[in-house]
Length: 170
Image (cartoon, rainbow, N blue to C red; front, side, top):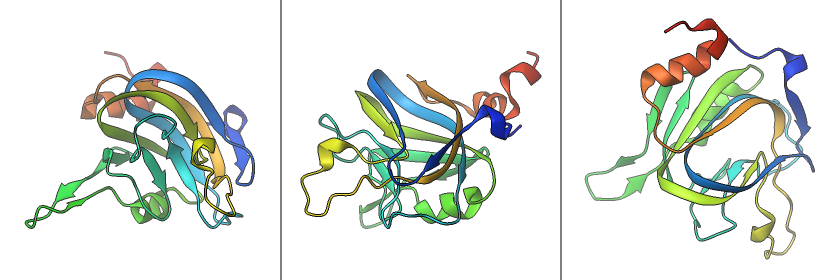
């Protein structure tokens, strides 16, 4: 079930975010998310792991890096696809905001391969601050129960996460 507000953290969308240093062998990231309907920043990042060599390891409202290949929202999947012409299209931000704005949703995103890097959640990396007029690109909203996985998760594992660990008996 969705988390209680008292068990979550609300981030203001201007200068607050979660920084996770030096995570090894990440393939998936799971979290409970509720995006605010009003955003103070024009460019909003959900995830950014571009401190190292992973230039496509970001998710923002303008584009989603091709490093991410599958997005689950409340167990429903949005996969990256390859068109007949060989062009690759990634997961879509609009699908995320239409399902998560103003309400809690369980979100899980998977990478094309394992990576080791620092990860910003709900902000862009400071390593990407070379452009003029740099802003942190924070996302306003609430977060709870963040998990990082070293392997892809199957539908059963995702349903257990979404239902809550304490409410599922094997």
